[in-house]
Length: 371
Image 1: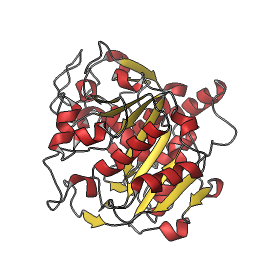
Image 2: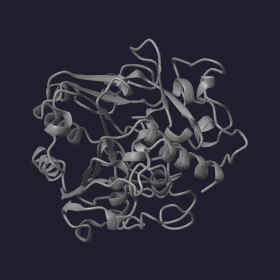
Image 3: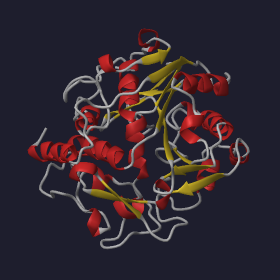
């Protein structure tokens, strides 16, 4: 941990938000080998194992962050997107039904759609989703493409508790502020830059390309972005379009393996996850999408659910056959720092399996070797 990161953690402790031990929460594991199984029943049982869904969402606005990484036209081996690297529409439908049944007031699907500022519904249609079916799964289901300003008049500023590691704050679509419960629906996958991409890494997609994109304006957002966020976030070659969201130290490391795990950790501190869901029924290993060489289709037949993103991702990492506490240069974190440990250092949760209660399927029965 660098001196700046240590000061950030100490600042959080001084504010009284860092506990003596990182917070923990139980994580549910379930066997599910096909998207044709009764997902509502399986996922409902998992929520019951965690204390029930109604207590979390009744009468509240729930925002679901999907994982739709990369263009919908880019498919791996011609397979449907949901069985490789995208959120599967059937898990999204099951989640929607359960939320509606538990009394959610409004359910909003969000994603910063790749190279697009158009309606999220159109992006989902291009991805092979039946939007009408999804909307009928519960009452008051809405959609928001958070890659730009969208239907809002301004962006919401989220400060990183303790001051941050790379950025002190993030300017995001208002959908992330106008919500009571934040859900991350992720896939069980490796990631070229961050080692693994689970519930926490999925939140990187909340950053709007209008501000953090490669073609964002110099001093103001580009409300019709057409590129990703490599120059700003991964490599630090330029600053975000809004000056107030600029970096803490422009002389810090520009290496993606240093920057991205820290950005993921602090984003989760600024906009915490309330429900973390990881789909490992069918997925890919070796990377996050078809653009990665050596990608393979795998079938772990697994679902993971929790109410703390760090503990949930820790169990997910272990279920992939890795040590969640692996230091840089080992395990899945061969070329990057361990974002689980960085998040733990920010007081977001524990990455220690010994401190996490696993309910449902045993971890030994769930483990599928990705490495």
